[in-house]
Structure formats: structure tokens, C-alpha cells
Image (cartoon, rainbow over the protein chains, first blue to last red):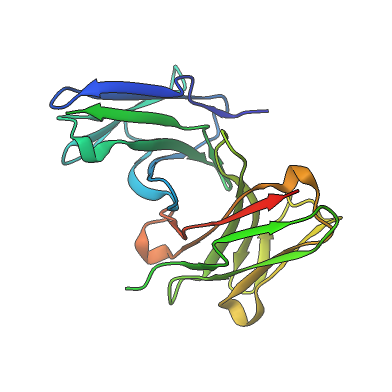
Length: 109
Length: 115
């Protein structure tokens, strides 16, 4: 029973363009959402988060949007850089954390 | 600030053998998590400690998995006996209320292969 879903296993984007990573969830009780970035052979690193009382949170090139009615969140990276190439996991939390399956982003120079 | 340390980084064992993983969280972090990440999937929480007490172990297969966090610092996760389906990366993470309510810091993980 996958409560957090990332339906795109991979995404390729040209350097300088926008990367949009999507995530859907099923549990309306989730009150906090996070994005993690993972390089090979490393653990995930926290990227950005958003509380369910907000619909947008921005940190430099990274912006997370939350649409509670659609149970959907997205991560925008603008402009994309080759160093952004990694696997991105979204996660949602009520009292426990639930992770999506990840989207592998490749930024092409 | 030192990060979350885990050892070993890699382990290969045969099915029915036992294995143990070690985690040293970031100093001062009261909450410690163990996750299992099977290839192609996201991390799945196995157990969460608050200091040396268990907060949530609902997804820990208790017939073969055990974990402890003595003195509220280091933690060990044990599998006994291992099955083929236990092949995964085992991630340890820690968090502190001061770092934001849900910001977890992950270690590099231990990649377990059961043959």
C-alpha cells in the first residue's frame, strides 16, 4: 500500500531549463512534506520541506508547491544544473515518514 | 559537525546467517531511525527511537529483526536469520527538534546482499 507515489521514475532536462518533479499522496492526514536528494552510495540529504498549512515554499533555486485538494506536491528546480543530477525522493509525514519510490533526474549540459 | 556514521558499508552473507549493523547518530540528536530501502523503492521505516525508547516499530519484522539503542546514543540493528528478501540498503537517520521538526539526517547506509 503505497501512500506516497512518484509516477515518473526518470526525467531528463537541459541545463538552464526548469525541472519539475511530481509526487502524489493518498493520506489526507499528512501534515508535512519533504524532498530529499540522493547521490549514488550516499544517504538521502534533506532539500526542502513544506507544512500542510502552506502551498508554496521557496529556497534559492528550489520551490515546492503543495496542492492539498489534489493531494499533489511538486518540486521545481530553476535553473537546472548538472550537479542537480540525482535521485529525488518525496516524503510525507503524519507521525511516521512515508517515502516515494524516487525520480532519477539527469540534467544534460 | 560530524554526520551520521554507519558500519559496515557493505555486507554479503548467506541466507539463514545473522548480521548486525551499527549506527552512530549526530551528537545531541535524540531521535534515531532505521530504514530499509529495497532496490527501486523508497526508504521504509523499520523502527524509530526517542532517546533509548522505541516510538514506532510497527513495520519491523520482529520474528527476525531486532534493534536496540543503549544509552540513547549508538544503535544496532540485527537480522537473525537473514532471508533473500532482506537484501537492501539499511539507512540510519537522526533528527533533533532544534533542526526543524522533521528534518532527518541520513547516514551513507549499509548495503546488505543475502545469497
